[in-house]
Image (cartoon, rainbow, N blue to C red):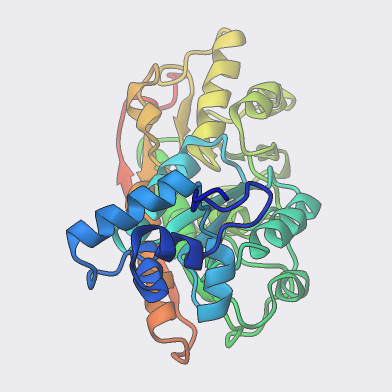
Length: 352
């Protein structure tokens, strides 16, 4: 008879197999798997060696379900191709990692149906909570049905359509979108611009609505006309922004400046201007929103609103962790400030 203590390859390896293989209790093996400090380093080394020898795979999701806890948090973003969200995700991951959590990342590409699929898939892993930057058109009731009432949710930078309840069961971290766009518009007005467009984004997006409202506020306070054709919509990326550049010049007199929805749109618009022989920062003024790393390195460097995305990511994670510590606390809505950063892309209008 064979004396090999290694379990048969076709049988699932259990904690009891590991315990028998290194002559410790099953409870000790469980403590090692959970990273408990109660196990001394020599015993931990023996158990870890036996886990490796037998090829044991720890089913963390099942363990979380048994303990009704989770070591992961889901982060669902609407546009991972935007450097702003890459920085935001890095901040989230830093804060969660410091607290002992793993980040489960999903990207929706601004698709509501994709968002539902991503949420459903990530929820199968039983995350402790969800940080969601909603896709355009996301509806409050649909999101509520997708995640249920037990999983904490934090919304970032966009509201959900139909979410008119101030006591909705989720926390919010928003940027000061309206004030930021107002500051950018006031800056262009102070340089002498009177024909200023609002460029990029979709009118259905709550963050775009807020930024457009700030633009309108500044224009109306200065007594300046707001021409409907100066509101140019585009997808919030540089490719579509460059393609829509010509729409600024369909009617005369054309604008001499544009407040852009975000930095990606502003960088795309500047490319489109160059293609038309118009020099941004010389012939046409441009402002962005976000202050992604590339904004300071563009040609010309981009005037924008700094929102410090990595810090916002850390803030979002910390808000969710606070919710996990205090699940019965009232829902919170936090508005993060933004700061106008002046660079060479904003210039006075060209001499008549």
